[in-house]
Length: 432
Image 1 (cartoon, rainbow, N blue to C red):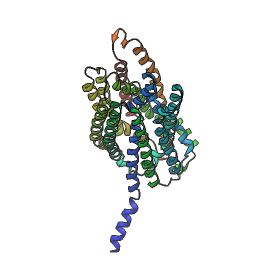
Image 2: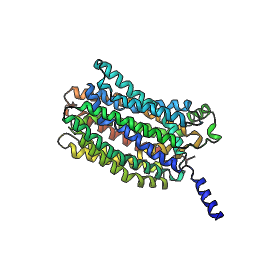
Image 3: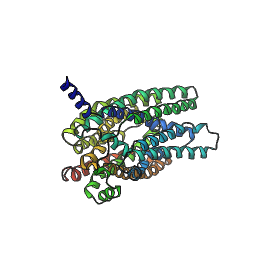
Image 4: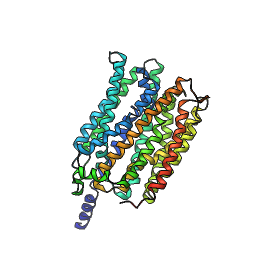
């Protein structure tokens, strides 16, 4: 009896953070649901109601990339001590900003002022969200065994994607129904209330989660860690993969939201169906890719994922209104396969090459540089999009849509990313 009790006690002590890991899976799902309502076609519906142009909407879609620059503040805000309280409070504030975005169309102020208020809420929400991301990710990923990171992040993504699939379909159908009745503004109220409810659930998962105490190494002065990273050339070789990827997809994807709603003429219900297919495909490939990364390396997994995503962008070069539903679906399926590994791969690449005490700082720097690169890319691409549209959808005398041209640029840039990953990163010295 005593031996049995000791065994159970040892097992419980050994896996003290199991419940917190489960909370992390739920936290990621609730955060994903909120992100669905403030991006893509949902953001395009809001900006269309406010009278914002396609090129500006594309820039706003990439605000999430610019806001990644805020992650550098996490280095100094949370230091290397406890981050739970700060993360919980700031996360709640950022999600309230997103909820209030849906109330802007109802404010009785001039249109230009509405747009300014809307942009400020969007920027504030993404800015604060990114300030907490490095510390939050490190808080929860510290609870996961290094040999199981690939499978755990895959499981986390699967829950988010499958839940997001149902959530997106329900919300998309709701918006279509109200729009058909000429009452789209009422659907905005429901979306805002939904975000408020999700904020409560999300905050609860953070409150109920435990945090692993920091080791002595992790309590080292942040300035010392930052200085060491800034002098580490091999670290910059690793994060440049994320910079190149952000440039590759932010040159095109921020403009797809308006393309699907306007030129391709997709209903919100059809967009939700595409999102469901995306979620199913990405879920199906997440775990196999996670196992592959755990067995081989995240470098090699990313090579496979980048290749598939590149083929997806190539398909989108030929996506036009006459074949839009078929070709865009093919693109989205291929993109889903690629993203099954790319999102988690960027984070795990840092965990594979950077020692534990440097990870918060390393993640913050990576996301800051990659985020700024992505946003600047979209700014430049928006001028190209505006130019093509202003010339009646012609480019060098050819009749093409702007999104076809930006998709071609994505193909070229992803190819550059793959070459860089395989000639610079994979051939460098083994992980630390």
